[in-house]
Image (tube, rainbow, N blue to C red):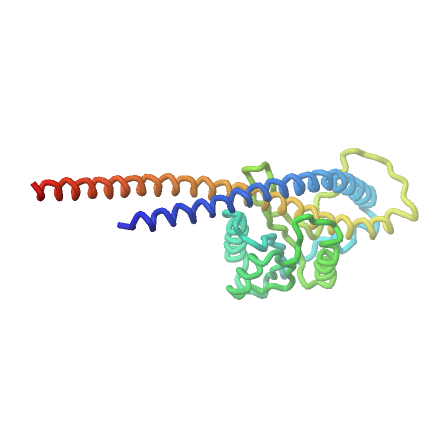
Length: 289
């Protein structure tokens, strides 16, 4: 049985740990508010950009835009998976959900490593795939919490360049989608080649383009794809902070439970020690009579 001193030291160390987890919870909550606001503000721009791109794609169905490499479907010889993870951990099952899903998906769909490549963000995912020998063709581990478009622009351009040079034939985004502060859902969506744009031009807005639709589309399609990657990273960043806030709240609650249990053990040990001292005093007094 541990001594009273050992129990007291463990109570003190657990209280210190609870202070840390509570502080991390508050930091994650503040970062979540910023990340959520940024993601919501960007979604309005992304929706409008998608509307314009869809409008051009639908009105030029017989023109050269339908043959644009980002719109054209080609035989899939190799699939790329852009997997979004974090750098630090301490966010519960945030990373394991994405990584286990990707691992199972690859095992189900691909017979060899020649059929797929991995593009990953975050040190957690990079370490996971490298240790298991997955073919990681591109990675990025310096994504800040306050994410801007410039932070991911070069990374997104590298991904599009790999698609343009036929290093892979389709690209899937796999990440955690932010639902609310206590809930995230896994998302697996195909980004390249771009699909279903024509069916989404329900607004039927007649735009006037200068110089012409095909040249505008040539600029907008890469911008749209880069924006989709940026939007996914923003969404995942909000989900990450929400998961970390929830994990730190659970850690603080668990620390409180441990402190209560240790305090009860300490009081019992203290009561037993007092009872033993009283017994010894009474026994000594009886021996003197």
